[in-house]
Length: 438
Image (cartoon, rainbow, N blue to C red; front, top):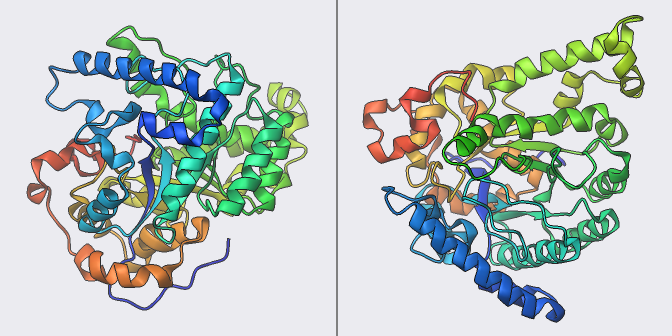
C-alpha cells in the first residue's frame, strides 16, 4: 500500500480498524445458491432455537452477550450488525467516520456454538460450510457498497478449498473489498493442515497479487474448549490471545513473508503488550536455529530458518501491523516500543467490550498521552495505508463528526469516565497494567 497524504485539518479523521458486522440469520438466504435453500431453512430453525436457549441461559445477567447480536439475534441490539443507517448514525455520534469490518454473525451452515464466546465445532460438510462463507462475503459486498468510502470489508476464505479460496480472492478484488482476507485459524483439533503448510501458498500468492492485507482476529484460531461451565469459558478467556498470536510465527517461519515481501499482515484485538517480548523470543530462537552448529534449536529449526533472509523483528517491521482495539493509557510506552507507525486503534463496535458510545472520552483518556503526530498515525494514517481509505473523501465527514486534535490532546481523568464505559478494557482503571493484553 502507498503512504496516504493527510489533508490539512484541525480534526482527527478517526478510522476504527476493528468493527464487526453480519446479516441476520434469515437474510443470508438470498445470497445462497437455490440448491441450498431447503437445507438452509432447517439450519436457520436450529440456529434460532439455539439463540432462544442462550437467552434462557443468560436471563439472570444484567446485560447478556446476546445484546450485541451474535448468532443473528434480532433484538434491540442485534440490528447493529446489519443496519447500515443505525451504524452510520451511531458511529458518527461516537466520532468515527470509517471502519474495517470483520464478520460477526453466524454464516449459513455454521454449527451452532455452545455459547456466544466459543468457536463452533468443525462440520464435516465442507461444501455447505464454504457455501455459507461465500454467502456472507456476498452480503458483505452489498453492505460495503452502501458506504464504500467508509467501509473496508474483510472477507472469508476456506482452508478446505484452496483453489476456491483463490477464486474468492479474485472475486473480492473485483468487488472492492479492501479489508482483505480473514486468515482462518487451524488449531490442532481442526480438520485442516496448519497455517505453515505449503499447501496454502496459492492463497498467499493471490492475496499478494491483488494487494490485499491478511487479517487474523482474536478468537478465530481457538480450539473448542467444550461447554462445561464455568471453567471452559474461563479457559477461552485465558488462552484466546495466544491462539491468535501463534499464527504470526507460523507464517514467518514457513517463509510466507520471505516469499511475499509486499504482503501486509494484521493481528487484531490481541493488545500490544505481548509484541516486544514475543519478537525478542522469536529473534533468539531464529538466531540459535540459524547460527548454532550444535543443539536442538539448529537440529529442529535449521531447515526452516535457512530460507529466512531477515530476523522475525525485521519481518514484523517490514510488513506486520497491530489492530489495537480500545488501546489502554498504560500501553503508551509499549506502543511506542512496537512503533506507533505499526499500531491501529479500533473501537470493536458493536461488541459489549467496545468503546461505543463513549469513544470520545476513551480517545482523550488514551491519546492525550501521545503527540498529535503519534495519535494521527494510530487513528488515521496507518489504517488508511493498510486498507486504502481515501482521506480526502473522509475529510468533510471528519470535520463534521470527529473530535479535533486539540480535544483529543486534552487529558481526562478516570473520575470523568461514565461508570458504564468502564466495561471497556481501555477505560477500566483496574486494567492499567502493561502486561494485560486482552
